[in-house]
Image (cartoon, rainbow, N blue to C red; front, side, top):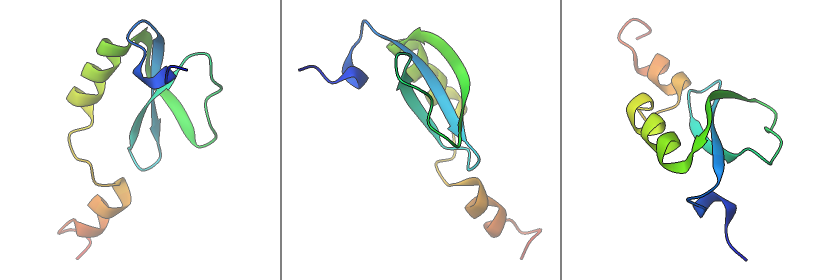
Length: 72
C-alpha cells in the first residue's frame, strides 16, 4: 500500500492552524478540526513549494509572540 502523502500524482491542500503550522493534506481526506485550507488543491510539488515559501519560521506563533521583545 502506498502512503498517500508520498503520492506525486495526488492532489493536496496545504493546511494551516492557529499556531501558523503548515501541513500537506490529501484532498480525499476531511480537513481535521483546527486546520484551514491555505492553498490548493494542487500537485504535491506545488504544495511543497508553497510551504517552503510561506512557512519561514518553524516556531509556533505563541512562541514567536512570547519571545518578542515587545512582550518581554
